[in-house]
Length: 386
Image 1 (tube, one colour):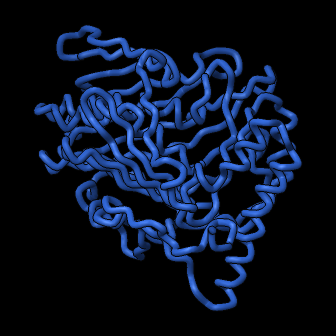
Image 2 (image 1 turned 90 degrees about the vertical axis):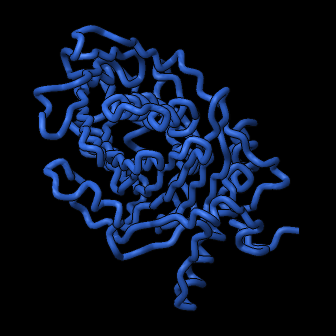
């Protein structure tokens, strides 16, 4: 789960494109395109949409994911940190596909509930092009006949050259396909991406129903706030996991067909394992991944249990000593983010109504100058490394 924000940076030129566009309406369109293209990897968790979806590894408090993606024209860097923990660690940790409907239901019904869903804070940026994103979110999964995935949080993108702010919506999803035995995600509802320049992107996710419709279908439009959605400048329609078309309403013509599967995602560049901090996710879960790859379930259980037991012990010690875990790159504030003011005063301000329990903000300079080891000799397993 800690690696999911990779979906936002694996096509660096798409992320940088709005910062290179002088026309504000075109910037809003390019931002919307980047957002739509990133959804498949986020909700299929990197899996091919023809195969199904994967259940990611559950996170542990303090888990880190640090790296960068580079293509021929841009580089985007990423910092992700788990800043709030799940109270229980008893759900099986593994990376497996949701292929069997019955086993998936049983997994969710037997997973112990958590009153404190994990919170991941994220910061990614492209210094050369002057664009960055900062945000945090929590994920909750429930089952009531469908598997429901609910995101709560807030996330903003800022373009320096135009002092322009976009807000990324938190999407709700459900896992469908029980009757076919092939489970896949569908996004639900209507969302808006407001921009401080006055341009709005509205997206209506209306995927395949019981008898009709197209899997992962969406319709979107870009318009000026004062004009309203009935007077769009651009419209988009298609599948967020496949192809979609862009229509320029000014000339009443299609201007682009975007095939997401033909847009190469670039692999993330990580530090060599020996240079990674013990809290970085690939190093922390290395032995679990190796055991899963070998099909050695005894070793998988043994290795995952080491971290689970150590994490429980850390939380008990913190409670006994009346201390709180201190994240490395992010700090918590009880005040609403001041950047919200750029988008206030609008009926388009549709943040989730749930209490966010504070706002997580990045220390940008610290994110740029990693100082390892971040927690001294303490590791996720609770002991000093030799």
